[in-house]
Image (cartoon, rainbow over all chains, first blue to last red; front, side):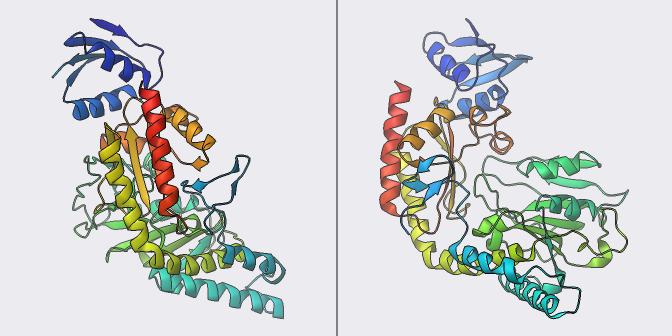
Length: 64
Length: 360
């Protein structure tokens, strides 16, 4: 599933991601908020999920 | 004094957990009289000047005894942030590499932008591995991080010259034996803004990077009354800090335990051993710091935040990002000497309610 969070400010991309990942085990996240990369790393560490950077403002998140 | 007084334009606060405090009462009382006595130029000889020179020397002696630096190595700066340039650029040569860390203050990054440098990585616990370096290299070493309160390990193995950023650490700074230059900010001990304390260990390895006629740095003008007020604030603050330390440490531990028990998914910077007692930073997952700051403010609690949404430029705190800590929902608490456990308990209960409401 693709989750488009372009234009959203933190913490909205991470909140939306957390909601979406309950239903899909893999999410492609689009986000251009400057805090997203740092927060994805911290969120993954805190929740046990994992992420890969696919490109500028594009990430693949996999549920634990 | 159990009430923290009034924050400008905000109204009465129940507790002030911001890094800024009202000027220490001792410093304030002195300042009122000092602007009458300290106006003369201490380098001239008439009576008023001699009086000003005595005042300057007294101030230097107070700083020397509490900061553990010989008074002859100390200088005053009207602009504390200028000290980053003086302290670092004054040690650099064309063959130097500047080593600094991702959690350094932005003033260090600004200096690093103009010379060959290497930004050292920071671990999740806030620690940095320092290189050995070469004799001409320079290390910008932060004694204590002002956002997280985490103490840095002493860079004893570094073979080059060391600039010590003591702006957040204040009197808690332990200068490494091989330090070269150091900078303190008066705000660390409830002193007035607009005065920095700068030290050079050995003048032979330092040159003034500003336009100058001789190699002294005292061509920078400063306010002698502010310097003396800062010295008196330091003296009073050191005593009050020592008297309250065990209480503040208990309150800090109480906050950490409360959060771990009552508010899930919170990323706390460092632990009780790695941080100083009066500083605490934590980030609350899925919350907006701007809203937390505003809601807490409405309940009478003034706090700081390093989150992007609460900063003017919308960039998250580079300190949190460098450590890999969560950058949104960040709250920074400064426990001042007059804080009480009652205030903190009410604060934490308010915070818990607000977070539960926001997370619904």
